[in-house]
Image 1 (cartoon, rainbow, N blue to C red):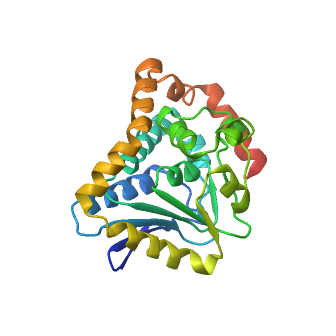
Image 2 (tube, rainbow, N blue to C red):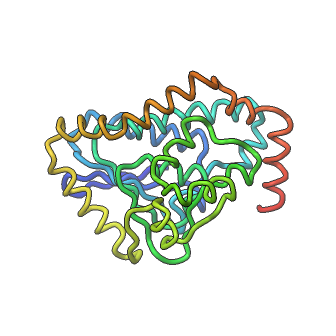
Length: 248
């Protein structure tokens, strides 16, 4: 499910789960567990990437339809925990976006310290509203944090799926390069960031992410679980079911 590879001071975590690395509770828990372990190990940077033609195509909607409200509640809990883990992860993280990064896949990439994307046919964006559900509170803010204000409403409201070049202009990614150069360049960047003395990097990252953390905490306190509750009812599950039938 998660393939680990070591390269110098960088640990590569590669999602290997089905054709498009769809996010279900098992994959999210596996990734969270790997990150917990890495906090205690000597690796000084992490590259997160996917296997095949997708970084991740987002949440496994069919599993959500089949599992119903109880499964959805569990899935959102694990997803939120993983988002927090990545935002607060004390080491440098680089998303090597090898293909499609959609919805939850896009959100995970936005929690990383740097985002590199392969040119070609891959698309990136958040499609929650197109599916008919809101963003979990912790899910929207990392997107807001990186997307240029000129593009934010289009990306969110219109569920726009952008090419790598469009994503670079919008701020969703930092670099675009040929697929064959993606991992070498991600490792190079990881090594460069790993040279920063770990406690210095950790403190600086905490300072840089403080506004994001504060927004999520404030909005969670203000709205409680309003967004999550909109995922659980029959209307939400019917919307997801219709989207699955139409697209899959």
